[in-house]
Length: 421
Image (cartoon, rainbow, N blue to C red; front, side, top):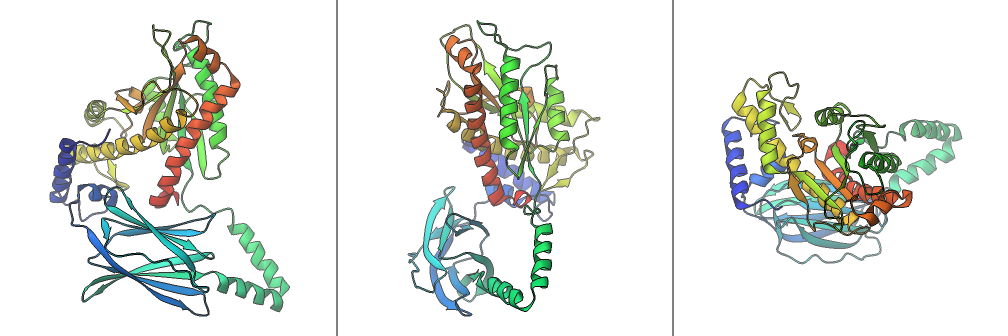
């Protein structure tokens, strides 16, 4: 499923065309998409200098000597406390030494290569700390200044306030309690769960009379309950009963609910009753191309191509086609990452019909801007798997496996997408 050289060249050509149309200087082209088309020489990380601890042990500054300007991002993790610095298109030309001084805010520094060309630096912290960075041009290149600040100073202020006035502390606590529920700066991560078939469409039927529409609805409800236990996630169903919903209507429901991803749940069937195993599908390139043509041809369709959150009028057919293609390409890339996570989790509870994510032109996967996948949980036509699909315990295991794959994808999005931070 890796992007072949032909597709890569095609995307690079389209990015150049977008720049020629004046998009590169606007907010339309996202950094993520531009990065995929970039062939810039790698930046060298030449040295890291620790300027030591200052301000009474509450601040520590490290200087990263770089050969050129750089794109970078930061996020923090807990249990244990650490800060992660991602340096785009960077190679390490020095040795990162451990910082183990008693007063140091950093216990050690680790690094690893990501995505073939990016450098990830991890600061293992001795205590909780905030971090900020500043990029400065020098006569020999650039300095990335990483400043770590201990939270000890804020704790000291709280103790002083407690001594001076208990009433002020109580007021402060009340204000904290009011603000505390708004711990997530972005919106809920919305998962649209689509139980296949329903109503007049029973789906596949097992030898013992088990109907696909019934078991997938039970699995979907279990997955919904599992997701809704997470404070930063929300699950919605395209159907919550035994009734028929058209394939296009399922897509429309997901978009109306503001879905961030779409998962369609099914049970496989085959005349060969010995076949077993789970499989996961995403939209094929051919399916994406035909869907793009459909969207652009339908003048009454309410969809407008977007890139980087900006809308583009359909009156510009060339630009609309370009943006829709780029949007679909990014969505398929995200769908693949999501589907690989889920397939890996399913392999822990069932055999796999196919060891890798497959692609097909399923209608429900054709949303051009919502990462989507279709999961064939098991073969309802196989007597053993039919029995398992009827088991509430096994339905729960399937739901949990899908949840863990989705959650891994969500956490990765939170690290790199401020929308969910």
